[in-house]
Image 1 (cartoon, helix red, strand yellow):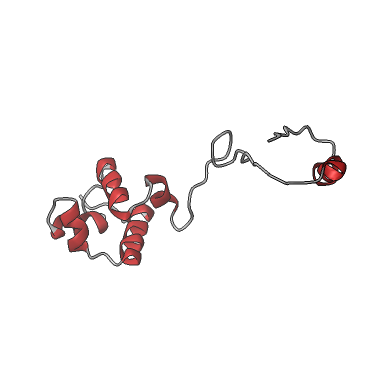
Image 2 (cartoon, helix red, strand yellow; image 1 turned 180 degrees about the horizontal axis):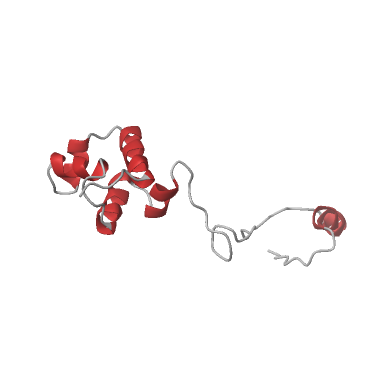
Length: 116
């Protein structure tokens, strides 16, 4: 039974071509014949998730980025991507202007000031 070519398969073909990889090259990395890999790309053989994971490794991408291609998936919420970065600022100032410069730069926010 033939299945209709899915959007994800179209994305896989686009990524493969963008990387400059031939079907033969990708098939060899997957340890399969080019004909078998071609059947996957053409939707005539089922794409298994394990194969998708292997493709992600070959393409040096995450599985989710293959799915969202050409966009890159960015998770929203409480994760490292969206957290504010910790910033360290070092300014050497004369003692008589230090408080004024800090207030000008940071306003009334609470700061941790490290003295050397």
